[in-house]
Picture 1 (tube, rainbow, N blue to C red):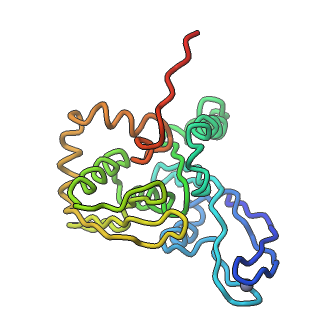
Picture 2 (cartoon, rainbow, N blue to C red; picture 1 turned 90 degrees about the horizontal axis):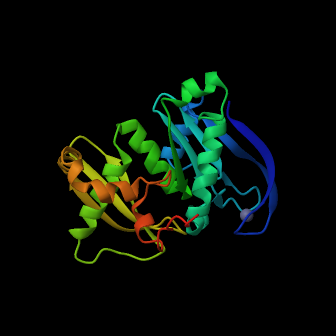
Length: 234
Ligand SMILES: [Zn+2]
């Protein structure tokens, strides 16, 4: 079931208040139209009743797609700085819904699911695209590092994200995006063969791949976000 609740929102352009249906959870197996709306960047976007400006709620919901083996906690982009605190909460939510703390029937469903945590609409959209394309997200993050190495002056910074945006038979198209506005800063392309090459020698990337996939937030930005916490001595 996909769950919505009515919420009061204020138009950022003119200040008009109105109500809209905010999603709490998406079941993409039952509502593939919602998955499409996310891919088309129109989900949870509404025109203001007063001035007509389009605006979009921040993502904050769980996304389930059993067909593609995905369970995703989608969070607002601005919360990424707290990903180390949010990751264990995400794992707990997954465990109680489909993992070790869930009823047996749910656990059976959960065996085919991989839990993930994303921030911002484009983080979520990318994971859904990878699910459709059957691409491994750890390998895709390694591709991004390779793409960045091959650009003379890649836009970098805390407010920039690099997202796989289109995957076709021969080409992978990546966008450097401003995290806040989601505007495209630069486009980069790589042959699809890059993915296959990296996947074929994934063992060589062992330690890096382990760092990228050490929690549900599988994103190259975790490499740049401060020191990883060492376990506290008992
Ligand atoms: Zn308005």
